[in-house]
Length: 183
Image (cartoon, rainbow, N blue to C red; front, side, top):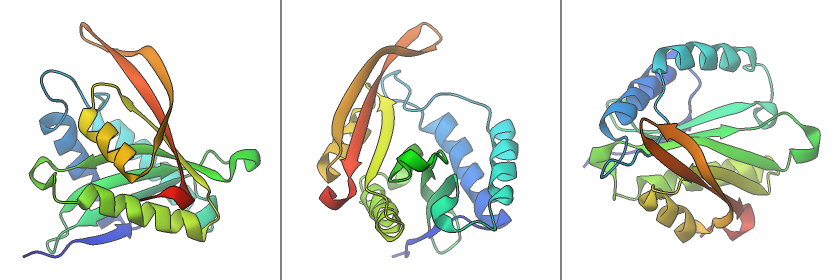
């Protein structure tokens, strides 16, 4: 059985593997029964923009970086799952972080990887005095909604018609987790 490791992406190799994983999710895993899980976007411009942001923050303490990418990877360094943690750089909300991307490779869903990567994120949040995690997801993404509820997230909002993809109108659910209540 292969081992699964977790880390914060820090090297070009880490980010290359992450973006390969992201491209796969956006094309192969994006939706069930015609409902997308993620907003379609072009990975290449996002990669360039994200890497510029990342490199400009390398010297900052981890608690002050605006973006962290947690990755779960196998023995071959293939990324199996990711979670992007964002900080908006505003002092008055320093006690919160935002999950701005989360996904598991289709062949690895249902194996507990999603919960384990969330546990890693929560562990970092505790170390840097973050008290809450916030996120949004499409209302049609029931597997993710159920996972988040299971680990302690609570629904805090609902936005109708947040995105339009083709002829499809999608609603958005906002959720928050008090770190000390992670299950």
